[in-house]
Image (cartoon, rainbow, N blue to C red; front, side, top):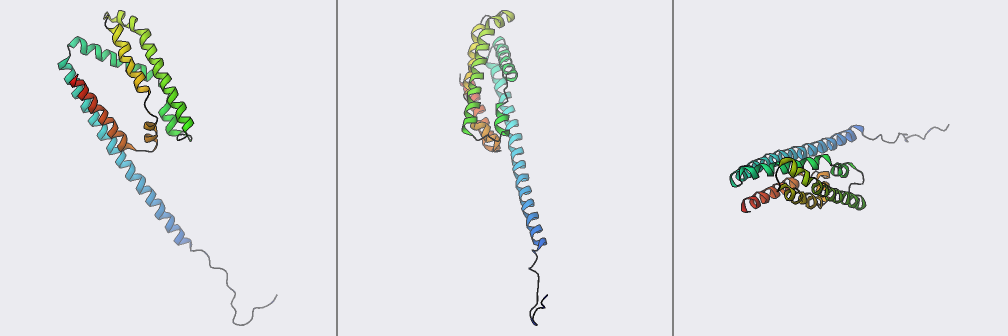
Length: 196
């Protein structure tokens, strides 16, 4: 073993400053947590505001319809809306949650398949509306339901052509855009209901 010459000091390479790295990691984690907290609070505010406004608009719409329509027709519309809502709930395929959770949620082929399934479901539900319209009318003793059920059922076909971009907005937590879209649709529906 050779001794170092005088004046030469052997030192180990400097150890990384662990405290500096830990502080930087802590700051990054705090920044990420703060960003997530801010997004969650804003999303919650938009969701609650949208829900409250939407509920208020539906209440106003129902009050106006109850004044405009004869009570018998208002009751028929309520019956039809309940039937359609039941068909939608019982036939839910979970496409939106699948798009949101899937690692392939942004894959064009996956989205096209989901959209096609959605359209086929809408057409299938309309066929169900066609097939139940006569028994439905006979059960309730209202012959006009033979025409009303398939006509209202067309909304299922129309809604089935919704873009999968709505599910992508949910996936990307674009709550503000979704809330504004929903509210604008409800306002348009209210205006259309009053005008017609």
